[in-house]
Length: 241
Image 1 (cartoon, rainbow, N blue to C red):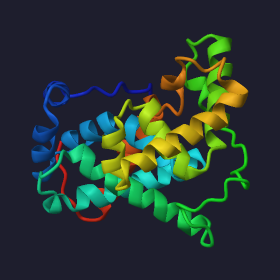
Image 2: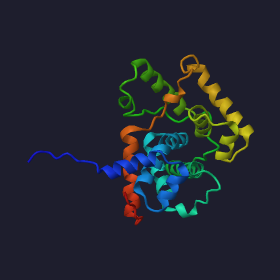
Image 3: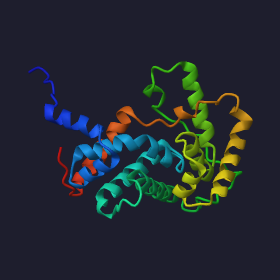
Image 4: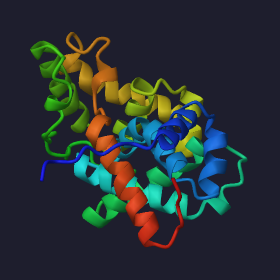
């Protein structure tokens, strides 16, 4: 018997398109009522930024994805505790930061997040699968991104996270200070020290290229949404299409 073509019901396609045009607050309200499509859309929108936040704390993509998944599960399982005094994206960012720090402490129980010895840098890490995600890029751009990711990975986490929030997300000093609950002067100091470390080896090669690093989209993004939905349903949260 020949393979069957799976068709998407027109009303589901229409609902997904409608969700894509909704505001964040509208999607949160829909997620509270058990809308699977709203949960998926929120994950799709937040994945790139939140992955970079997690990756700014932990030392590998796998650890970042694990922390991100746990943060999503925690947030969507406890939506009733979200009081909307801040944006949902701000609230869940703090959950991601906490989950990532927990992940790091579990992997390195003797290491304090904010007191990393600057001499003992994390090892240089490879990022499997990322080059194939952007086949349309030139070889030079792919090599540049690899260089950037390696260099940024060498920064200690307390420098890496503010650096990523500033350079990839375009956040202000004050916004970063609020997110990380530290003094703005501390943020400035860490950014200065991070840039000084990077400048010696790659300053001439990275100008304008930071927006390309640590991408999180395509199949990886869709797979994250599927895993979160499956876990939420397994935990008894009723979601509907």
